[in-house]
Image (cartoon, rainbow, N blue to C red; front, side, top):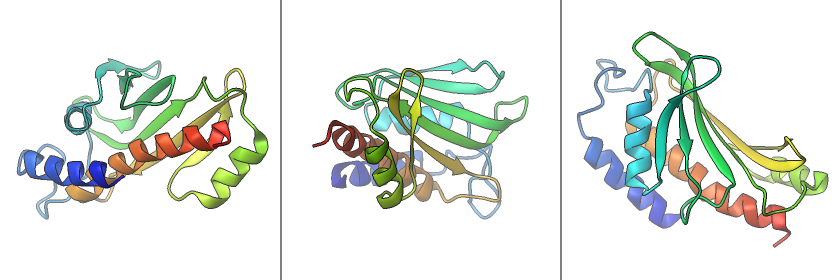
Length: 164
């Protein structure tokens, strides 16, 4: 996790003043865009592509790989305007190599973990979700740290679902 948090500081420095479209006069980000989140994911060396979800809102499809221990990961955007500026997003991933979800492990995760929510999806596989709301404003560093926290949580979650 330390490496991701340090990476988050680098992302924050790299983004510098380029967070404009959704930033308020106070420097708070009030809307997030696929381009902003894609830039953060790039810094974490996460392979992805920007797409459009079934609801017409933008989404990011993240490829599995060394940085992503899930079978699939998506970033779904909510409450978006025509310019693809959105008020909130959901980070979501599911895990096939952990076997079927164990309700005791899911419940334990939900009792003990902060900021993320575990559930059973699709074919009884465990899934992890985290919402980030920018409506009203979120600091640039807080946004970067929350995404880094989720990426770190994915590894911990996968191990917990395997019973490790």
